[in-house]
Image (tube, rainbow, N blue to C red; front, side, top):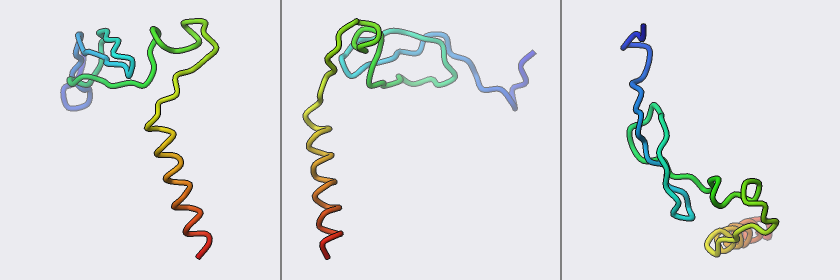
Length: 75
């Protein structure tokens, strides 16, 4: 028997949204949609593809961070 003050509520139909816009439902203790970066529809392990998706904003964000680090180290 679940004790209400210890155990969270369990939701049966929580939507999971992937970065590739694939959606599916799972059971979870959270009540809002879950956002993930990879799913069985786009992950290379499940699809068998060797190439991975490179998202442009991730590369730009990394390069900006590297520029800031270089600027701080040169001071």
